[in-house]
Length: 238
Image (cartoon, rainbow, N blue to C red; front, side, top):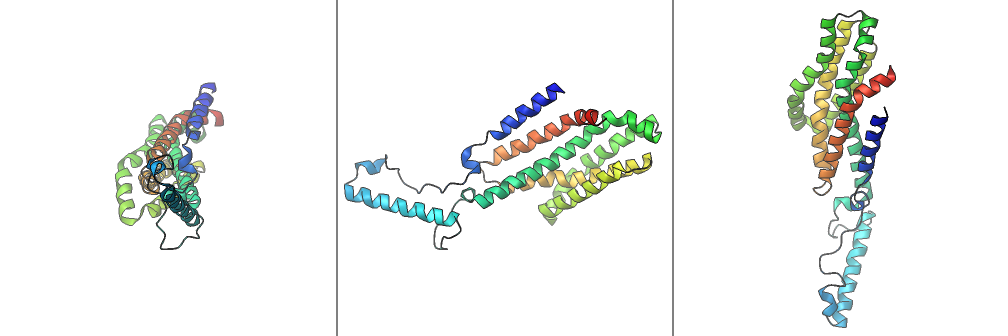
């Protein structure tokens, strides 16, 4: 347990080390040299005119970031808007949470098998199916889930998989016998197969090229954390 707590603290420390420019929007600097560049050697009149032009561009960038800019203004980068940035962070949180739950359900059942066998009077052969009934549809249909996301829409397929995963997870918790549990575990794997590829595809389209590797790295890190935390959480719950 102490080792798991240390691993979680290290993961959270890495997650909080985010470059400031990726989370806090700043208007982009106008093209051209800074005041310490080539303009330093220009005459005073030209330097004052270039400074005035840079001030006007900065003011226009601030107006566009606040939503008060005109259509004729040059567009601002998407990361300079606090609203878009907040939406990207919530998108990342949703994708990471879904992937955490998908990987968590792969390993969390392994520790609970003796309790399931005692509560439902299940034989060893049926216990194997309780574990594999989730993994087989997940591994078999994950490519189908990605194809459906491309054709029907990533958000639509992701939400459908999330709803199915949640409903059938509750069904697994309320299953009265082993047959019902195996069926609900298989349907839960189908929902996970719809969610997993759509979550990564949504991330790649929601983030610009600069912070995209960081977002994908966070998604991968949370995925691995969910896979490793399955037995730990199962032991704590039991």
